[in-house]
Length: 277
Image 1: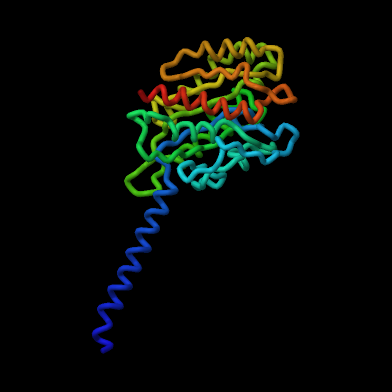
Image 2 (image 1 turned 135 degrees about the vertical axis):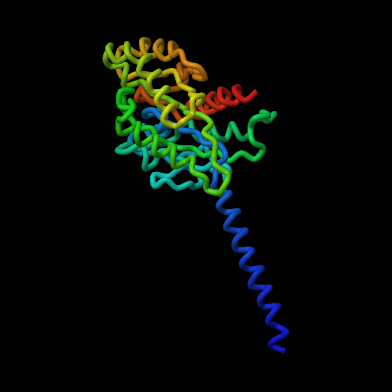
């Protein structure tokens, strides 16, 4: 009788092992993005929606709600389900709140009709890299923020499931408020931004990487208009410009409000989706 049960027990063990392997594979696939977006710049990319008093109010608009198809690369370089605030543990020594990343990702996923070049069941991987109060010189090649961004980007592009590496889709860039303080920095902004884009593309072996830069809504100094003009003067292929000017600003006169960040996320998504047609 025991001999008759042995094949059945072996088969059951084999089925359990197969189920475990399939479950592990499905779990890994769920934690693997198909499209990766870098989020870099200073505080308005890091997000201060609901956090301009130094503490985030915890309000999560529907456009920023978690989704199993939106992942975040954590500070320890692991994929996890993305939640606000995206830059927690990344935008150091600051209290991040709502930024444009989550509404951007959700707007891309719900695009109708779906662009032909957007994967049917895309999983978006967001890689937060922004740091508040940083001039563009702090993002030059070889600077700590630049090196941190590259390290995070390279970690994000490693395949979680063998044979299915994620694709680097775009760099979303919102920075420049700190460069409005000194005329010299404002005057050098175009050249520094172009050097930054060229360096990122070279170091990530992505010569055609899409870069979407946000035109400043506010500045920390007198030369806001000069930096905005410098942003519009960037003359490189596959660099898009989205203007935040006119979006609602919080009482600190520097940071976008939560509704403004949601709107900006949609604008960035529209700019990205327009490149897919």
